[in-house]
Each structure stands twice: as structure tokens, then as C-alpha cells.
Amino acid sequence: MNPYLSIIVPVYNDEGIISASLEKIESGLKEWRSKGYEILVVNDGSYDETEKVVKDYSRRNPSFPLRLLSFDKNHGKGFAVAKGMLAATGKFRFFSDSDLSTPLTYLKPCIDALEGNADVVAASRFSAGSKILVDRSPWIRFLSL
Image (cartoon, rainbow, N blue to C red; front, side, top):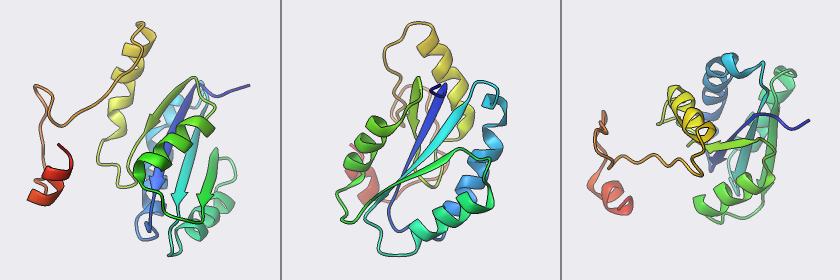
């Protein structure tokens, strides 16, 4: 049976943060356990120990529904997100950066919208009412336009 929810986490050289992020995801998804979920980490050609850290986390937490999809070459975040979305099996699919810059508390309103017959839910820092709590560098702001 397919899970209700899939969380896709694209990673690239994230060995320093991915374990803590997986802990936060595991803790933040407890309310979804009854409906079922999976976490799909997409390793986009990392040359550090990211893949090993994810595998170690999975071994230490065998009941945590974690899958790893790895690519030998870096193709970019869009590629990793697309491949993750296609490989995911959940009824609803979300992606989050490995630093969890968008808190998991936003999942419920998104799912509510999807269950209310929205076809797609997209979050944006530029939407009316958005609050950017940590300013980003001019370069990052430019790239996100």
C-alpha cells in the first residue's frame, strides 16, 4: 500500500546537516504516522559523506520510512527534485530543502488545500503575507527571482 505522504529531500554535500534534518523530519511527522509517510532523500552527486550519513541514519532508525536515491554526478536541484517526485509513492508529495528552511508546520495547510481539490500547492517567499525571517544574500535573492 502506498503511503499518504512523501517528503522529497534533495541533497548535495550535506553531510554536516542531513542527520539533524532527518531527526527533525522524523519528529515533525509523528502526527502523520497513522496515515503513512515516506522520506526520500535524493543525493545529487555529493562528493562528501552525505550518502554514508543517510545510510547510517537509516540503519540506526529501522522503523523510520527512509529511502535513498543516489546519482554519481551532480545534475542540479531541479533534476533531484524531479527524480524524487517521480520515484516517490505517496498520494501527496512535497519537497523540502535539507536545511528545512520551510518548516514542516506548513504541511497541514498544504494537504488541506489539496484535499479541497487544489491540483497543486506552491509556496513562495514572494507571496502576499510572506515573512522572510532570515535575510538572504543579494546573490541568492537574485537567483531566486
